[in-house]
Image (spheres, rainbow, N blue to C red):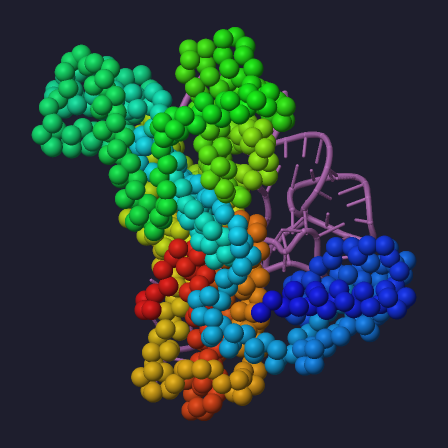
Length: 555
RNA sequence: GCGCCUGUAGCUCAGUUGGACAGAGCAACGGACUUCUAAUCCGUGGGUCGCAGGUUCGAAUCCUGCCAGGCGCGCCA
C-alpha cells in the first residue's frame, strides 16, 4: 500500500482543478510534503501544501487550504475526516476500513511485501570491507561488513541488481613486509634472535602463522633469505590470512559475489589503459620525473602522482583503473564503503571518476571509526602494532545477531562506542532480542493456534471490523507504511532506518500482546487477530532478513 | 594551518530531508506472571538540541562565526 503516493496524487489533482477553475493562481507547483505527523491528534497524514502555496497564490494559507479541501476527490470510504489545522496544515484521517486492506495484501505477497521495483534496471555494485590481507579483521571492519551486507540486501529488495565485491590489495611492498614478518617469526621459532623488520606486523597472529607453517612440515627458510623467498613467504601469509578473513565473514553472515584481486588489474593491462584514457582527455602531465593526474581540475586540493619517478605505479593509479573497470562493467551506481580514516582520499577518486566521464555514479560511504572500550577504558587499535579486538572475538563474545544489530542501529557517519563488556553484559537486554523475541512470540502463538486446530488461512475480510482497538490500528498503520520506509532507506542508502522501524513494530506488538489475548473464546475475533499478528510476523521477518539477523521461531 | 565527520536526557543513540508541545533503549524509582513465551508490559522522574548571530510563516535540521571531540592532509598502501 503506497498511501503517501495515493494521497499525493489526490492532492495534486485537487490543486490542478482549483487552478483550472480559477480559484488559485500560481506559476509552478512548489515542492510539498505528505508526511505522518508526529502528533497522533493531527491525523494519519498531513500536507504542508497550503503553507508553501500561500505566497505564490497570494492568499492566506488557511484560505488556500480551504480551497484545496473543497476540491479534494478522495475515493469513497478512504478518508474519515479532513481538517485544516494550525497555520494551514491539512490533516487527513484515514478510515479504519482502509487500513484493513493491508492484511490481505501482506498475506498474499508474503516475503515479497516490502520489496519493490524502485531500482528496476539499475545495476549497483557495493564494495565493502576490502581489508588488506595483512591481519585479521577487527571490529571496525565488522561495522563496514554489517553495513555493506545490509545495504546490499536493501538494494536487492528494492529491485536493484546488486553485486557485492571485496577488493584485495595484493600488489606492492606489503607482501614483502608480510614475508619479512613471517620470516622473523620462523627464525624466532628456530631459536634465533634477529632484528625485527622495520614496519613489520607485530600481531600475535604472525606467530601462529609461523607455527602452522612449520607444523605442516615445511622447512625453515635459509638465513639470510633471498628476496624471492621473502615474497614467497609473503604470499603464503597473505593467502592464509585471506582464508581466515573469508571464514570470519562467512561466520558473520556476510557473503560476497566477487573477490577481486588488484593483481588482476595489471594482468589485464587496465592501469595502462586508464592512463591512456586520461591522457587523451588531457588530465595527465609529467613533472619531476613522475606522472601526475590533474586532480585540481576537479576540485581536489592538489594534483596526484599516478606513476612515481622510479617507475612504480601508485595505489591511487590502481584505484583509478579499478573504478574504470567498474563502470565498464555497466554499473549505474558504485558504492564504496570505507573507513573514515580514508576520507581525505575521496576527493581525488571522485576527481578521477569525473575525469573518466562517470560523474555521479560513485558514492562513497564513510564509516566512522569504532572506538572500542573494555570496561570503560579505550583500547587502541592498529594492525601493525598488533593490539586490537578482532571481529572473531566480537563474534565469540556477543554473537553475530547482536553485533550486527548494534552496528546497524547507528548512522554510518557517527562515531560508535562499542564497549565489549557492556555489549556482553547487556546481551540479554540487547534491542536485537527485543525484535527477535517479538517474532518468536508470534511463532509460538501461531503454533498454539495450530495445536487447537484454529485455521489461520486466507484472511476473512468480513472479520476485520473486529480489529478496532488502538493497538490494532497502530500495528496496521505501521505495516502499511513499511514499503515506503524500505524505499526511503534504499534511496538514502541507510539500512539503519529498518532497524528503528523493526524496534517500533516490535514495541507495538509487545504492548498489544500484554494487553489482549489473541486466542480467545470468540472464534471470529481470534481469527481476525491471528490474521493481523501473522502479517506482523511476516514483516518482522522481512526486515530482519534485510539486516542479516536471524528471525527465530523459538527463543 | 587547511579539509572531512560529529556535538540532542546521567549513558548509548534516533529524529521521516524545514513543520505543529523534541523521541527510543539502557541506567534510577514504583507496579504487573495460577492466562497464547516476563528476553515482555504499565507508570514516574530526566533535555537552554555545544555557543552566538542570520534566513524563514516555522530551525535540532539550512547559512555564517566561534568552542569541543575524532579523523585526515606522502612520488605509502
